[in-house]
Structure formats: structure tokens, C-alpha cells
Length: 404
Image (cartoon, rainbow, N blue to C red; front, side):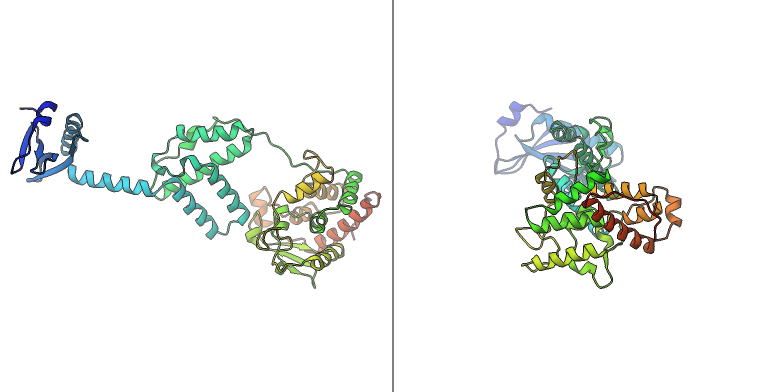
């Protein structure tokens, strides 16, 4: 005889265990302490076994019957329901531990061990912060509909490129989770085409020689922090990436041999990079040393602590203060200016300019064979460039003479 909710509620505890059957091996055990527990009796490999299903009323009659049918299905497939339950419980426990944030931090640590630049790690940590809504969710349970709203939120702020980068980062986390057995698919693949494609925006730069000369004169008259003024002047002379300059440390500079060696860990292309130091740059470094009243390994420590460099906004903010609009000039624009003017003179080998910019050759085969450093030519080129900057600063013009 099958059970009903009324029979179950009316069942009273006795001095010994009472077993009420619902058929098909499903039983309700009423214990002397008044508890009512569901048990499923079954036989596998010739052995009689019991599966604990739950406690009434938190597990009702309908749920108990569903568990009975699932147990039958497993038995028909040759699986032990008790073992399946134990494995499912273990999987759920593992899922609760393997949250998106846990997997993401593992991935970031892996990238650190691989020698990725700290700037790259910082950006990924920032993106992880934007993924906060799914941070505590088990990575294996996150689906595309959960990810799209947080991407849309970033997109709604007009940050289309950031939204695209966030999707790419989340995809990296899922692919790492798949490779480590903690997820079965990457839901971000279903979101391709769901976001507004970011427009490619080239960094603002003043590349016309006379206008560039006016920029240099304006920087010379900067009335803010002298260290900021020196940073802009060194950036103009060396045209390294702003992040490479901001994180520069004194132990990277061989002033006696006029060389700045930037370690591979801080370079975008993961290769150490040499920068010739012309006399004008050496004078600026000497001035910077004399201004330093705080002991720091960094050339340009921040105001709050000597252990961190100035922010990435410091140099751009200085350019805004000098009157140059965001669409007109950026700290990164010194690279475009130098590249444009140097290439237009026709004095220098294009590969020498590219090596000085620390660019990777887009042709993988060519890159494999192009081992030349062009160091001697780069030293001459940087000397010419610094003299050119002095000439432009004074209102002169670029003269394309034969390189010496």
C-alpha cells in the first residue's frame, strides 16, 4: 500500500523503529525519537543495501519518489546509487571550493611564474575586480546568461574596449578551468558578437616636427613637480613605453657606459631591451638624483609610498595641465612622434627604428632570422634624435642629412 501525506503526518513514534513502505523499495522510517527518515532499499551485485534520501518534511513524498526513480535508473545502468550520491556530494563540495575567483587567482599566479610583466598582472587583477558578480560562483556552474549582464554593465558606460577585454579574460579563466578539470565548457564563446565592437583608437600624438618642438618647449616650462617634468623630458628622448619609464629602477642604469637595460619581465615582448643614454638624458638623470629626498629604488616613486611608482595617469594629467587635449597628445604619443620623424628623414634603417621601439616583427619567419640588434646604428640614431629635439625646441627644422 502506497503512502500519502496524511498517513505520513499521522504516523506516531513507538518504542522501536517503524518502517512504512511506499513500494518499489521506498520506505519511511519512524524512529523512537520522532524523526521520519526516507530510505531506499535496493540490491546490487547480490547485496542488499540502503540509500539515505532525506528527512521528512524537508524531503516530501514527491521528492522521495523522484529519488526512488533516479535510483532505479542508476541501477538499470549498472551504477550503485549510494556511490553515485557520494560522488555527487564530493563534486558539489569541490565546486563550492573551485569558485571563479579561486580559479582566476590560480591563473594569475601561473602568469606570474611565467614571468608576465607586473603591469599585465595588474590589468588582469583589475579585470577580475570587474567580474566580481560571479566571483563566488562555482566556475563549473556559471553560464553565458550570468556573464552577459556584467559585460553589458561595463558596455553601458561607453567602455566597449574594456567590455571586450573583460570577456576575453573571463574566457581565459574558463579555459584554464577546463584544462584543470574544473569546468567542461567556456560560456564566453556563446557571447561572441553579443557586444558592441570597440573602435580602434590610435593613441594621440603630435608628429609634425614644428608642433613637436612647441610641445618640448612647453614641457620645459612645466611648473608642477620637477620630477614629472623630467619624466616627460626623458620620455621624449628615449621614447620608451610610459609604463617602462614609470617602473624604471636605478639599478637598471649603467651611467658609466650610457646604457639603460630594461629587464625582460617589464617589457611587453618579454625580451630585455637596451636604451642608449645620450648626454641630454644623462643630465636629466643627474638632476633627478639631486632632487631625490627619499630613498627609493624607483626613479619616479609615488607621493604616498616610495615602493610604488607614479600612477599611469600622472604623465597624461601633466600634458592636460600644459594645455594639450586628450585627443591631441598622450604620454604614449612620444613613441609615435619619434617613429614618424625618424622614418621620414630616411636616415635610419627601418629595423633599427623598430628595435629601438622594442617592437616585435609581425612576420614570424622574419622574426626568427632577424637577430641583429643594430646597436651601433641605434646609438648614432639616438644621438641624432636628441640633437634634433634640441633643434626643434629652438624653432629649427628637421634636416635629413646622411647618417654618420
